[in-house]
Image 1 (cartoon, helix red, strand yellow):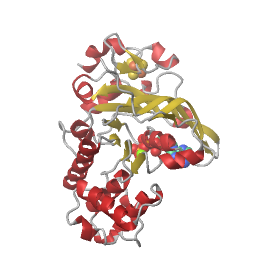
Image 2 (spheres, rainbow, N blue to C red):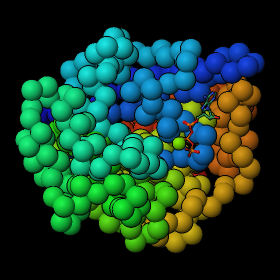
Image 3 (cartoon, helix red, strand yellow):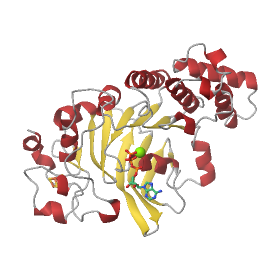
Image 4 (cartoon, rainbow, N blue to C red):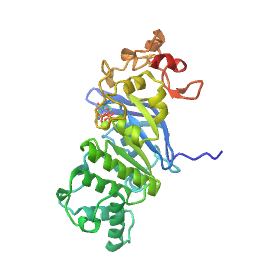
Length: 333
Ligand SMILES: Nc1ncnc2c1ncn2[C@@H]1O[C@H](COP(=O)(O)OP(=O)(O)OP(=O)(O)O)[C@@H](O)[C@H]1O
Ligand code: SF4
Ligand SMILES: [Mg+2]
C-alpha cells in the first residue's frame, strides 16, 4: 500500500488570543490532515474555531496571538516554525484563500483581470503583462467566467456576486497552489449561485489537483462536495470521518445532533437548526467534556464532567473525542 503524504497536517495546534481580560484559549489541540487533491469540510456552530483554524495556518492572526503547535506541516515545511518572511511566500502562492465576501479580496477601483494579473506577477517576477493576462484568462475560464478575456477588463461592480467569487477563486488558483482555504465561500450567495460557485471550485480541484479545506455551516454543502469532514466544537476537533461515515454513522454525540437537527436530507442553503442549549464561552470552558451540558447520550456520566475526552480512535478505528466512543450505536439509534 502506498501512503500519500498529507499536503496539510495540523498536529496539536493551540491558539490563544489576547482580550482586555487577558489571554483566552481559542483552539485546543486541533489535529487533522488533508491529502493532496482532497476536499475536506470543516463544520461546527458559530464560534467553534473554524475560521481561527484557517487563519492560524496562514498566521493571519490578531496582534499578540499565541500559537503553540506540535506541527503545522504543509508540503514539506512546518508553518509553525516558518519565518514571517517565508510565510509571505506561502500565502497567495502555495496556499490560496477564499473568504465569504469577495470584496474583501477585490479592490473596487481596479479592473478584475488586472488584480489577478498582479497576484500572479508578485510571485513570478520577470513575467510580462501578456503572459500574466493569459494565465488570468485561463483561470477565469476554468472557474466558468464566460467571455473571460473581455470581462477581465471590467471592474468588480460590473460583476455579480457569484461572478466576483469566481474571480476570487481564480485569483486563489492563479499561482498553482497546493491548497485552498475557503472560509464560507458561498454563504453570502443565494442557493443556486452557491451551487454553481462550488461546482467551479470542485472542477478546479479536478483539473489542477489542488486540495481544498471547505469551511461551512451547511451540511448540504459538506454532503455534496467534501470527501471527509472535521467536526469542531468549542475550539477542538470532536470527530474526523469520511462524509459517508458522518452522515450514516456519526460517532460523537455532537455530530449526531448536528446530523439529526438537519431540516431535510442533503438540502442546501439551510442554516443548522439549533441543538438545544448553547456552546460554552471560550472564557468559561467546563473542565470535562465541553459538550457535556448539552449532551443527550445515555452514557453521559460523572467522568464527562471531570475529564476532558481527547480525540482518539475507537476499537473499530473511528476518531472521536468522547469517553464513550465505543458505545456509539446506542447513542445514535
Ligand atoms: N480578535 C479576537 N479576539 C478574541 N477572541 C476572538 C477574536 N476573534 C474571534 N474570537 C473568538 O474565537 C472563537 C472562534 O472564532 P471563529 O471565528 O474561529 O469561529 P467560527 O467557527 O469561524 O464561527 P462562525 O461560524 O461564526 O464564522 C470565538 O469564540 C470568537 O469569539
Ligand atoms: S464525553 Fe460524555 S458528555 Fe462528552 S460527548 Fe461523550 S458522552 Fe457526551
Ligand atoms: Mg468563521
